[in-house]
Image 1 (cartoon, rainbow, N blue to C red):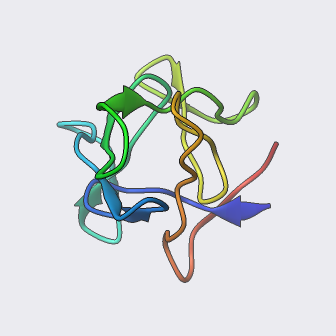
Image 2: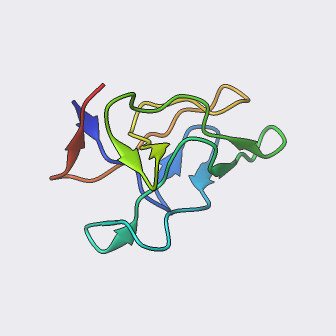
Amino acid sequence: MLPAARMGDLACHCGVVELGSCNVFTNCIPQTFLGAPVCCAIHVKSCICTASCTVFVNNIPAARAGDCGGCGTVVSTGSCNVFIGP
C-alpha cells in the first residue's frame, strides 16, 4: 500500500501535482487521480499515468505516491496516514 497522493504533493523533476477532486479529500486536501496534471520543471506538463486499480475517486483510479507521470516524473510525496492499495 502506498501513501495517497493529493493536490500540491511533490513530484520528481521539481514538479507538483496540480489538480485534485472537488469532493474527495485526504487529510483535508483534494485527492488526486489518474490523468491529473503534474507540473514538471524539466519537461512539458504531463499527467499522472499510473494509479490504483482497486481504489477510485469519482470513478477514476486514485493516485498514490510512487505513481508515474507521462514525462517520467514520479509523485514523490503523499499522505502520512492514508494508504491506497494496488
